[in-house]
Image (tube, rainbow, N blue to C red):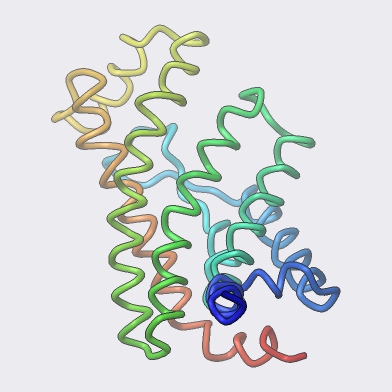
Length: 208
């Protein structure tokens, strides 16, 4: 039983989030992720309210280097900071952002933990990108879009979205042709940046 606990602890990286050394690294990456949240831009052919930011990048790098638990903690702290300082959704947007972020980080970092090679990371990132698309679609359908519908009529949201993508006719097509592909593209872009930066940053993060 002790051996199993040790293996699980090492796999998920729980030890990292309970040490002073690990908490310092998580704190730095969390603040960095929070600051990056303020840099966002729209993507052509997608509704204007879907904006790209790379704030999941520090969490993904942290998850790969320190374990899934660290990546989850970075996402959690990032969104808590945003909720405390700049929320416009009463926490709905931050909760959705957290769920969407960890849907990429958990598969990617868990797969890399199982297979400590570049192929393991790539497979994990592909699975994570698909999960991010699905979770992003569900989070928008059940949480974000109903919230925004209280501020702006749903018909107006659909009309704005349709002006960017003619395939969007209603809330379901908005999710299918807007939200899901947007999150998959976002995951791919974040993954490309992660692959290019990880080798340089992982030795620093793994230092004890």
